[in-house]
Image 1 (cartoon, chains in turn purple, orange):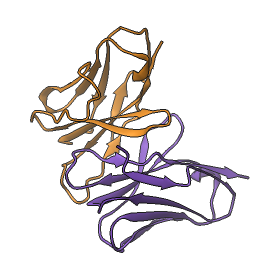
Image 2 (tube, rainbow over the protein chains, first blue to last red):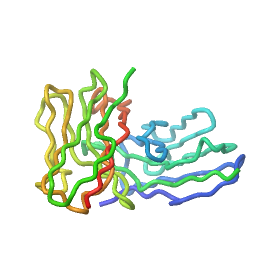
Image 3 (cartoon, each protein chain N blue to C red):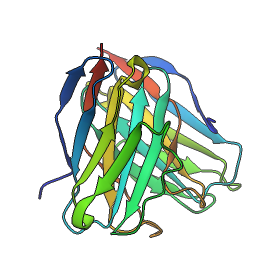
Amino acid sequence: SQELEQSPQSLIVQEGKNLTINCTSSKTLYGLYWYKQKYGEGLIFLMMLQKGGEEKSHEKITAKLDEKKQQSSLHITASQPSHAGIYLCGADKGGADGLTFGKGTHLIIQP
Amino acid sequence: GAGVSQSPSNKVTEKGKDVELRCDPISGHTALYWYRQSLGQGLEFLIYFQGNSAPDKSGLPSDRFSAERTGGSVSTLTIQRTQQEDSAVYLCASSLARRDPNNEQFFGPGTRLTVL
């Protein structure tokens, strides 16, 4: 059963605007991964968060993991067309062998 | 360096036929994962290999699905008597080690399977 909820399911943002994508788990996470998927391509690793309250940034993308390690947000500042794609959060719950993924957030950047 | 590669990139087959999907992990990566991405379902974990150890098959959706990994490297995912609901993108990923805190899984481009 799906244990990771992502919101929103889809997002249309004007180029240059900021946006936030959320990922919520019903259980405490061992690790939380953010991936980006461009259409027809594989998954590209963005960031991995493990500690409660942790925050990481890469270029214009910042990801945070809350203190309880059950919710993460991905924030994009001054969005660009290259940010368009599907953003997936993946969770390592510490017991499973593979990651459990959310259904993804489909991001469209309007020029 | 080379990433994870998968073949074929696209496969169209008739219902009832068997198909074999191949994954070449990054050299030196001991952990290998198979996932399935169905339309509207998100990514679903299927099976995991750690080196030459027996795989954890708990995620396989039915006994028509099987996977093997030869010599701790290349892996094949076989689907027997394919059904239309098997249509999906099958993704393979590899990582250096399973329980490393920085266990980044590197994903291949996927194989798009269409069962007619």
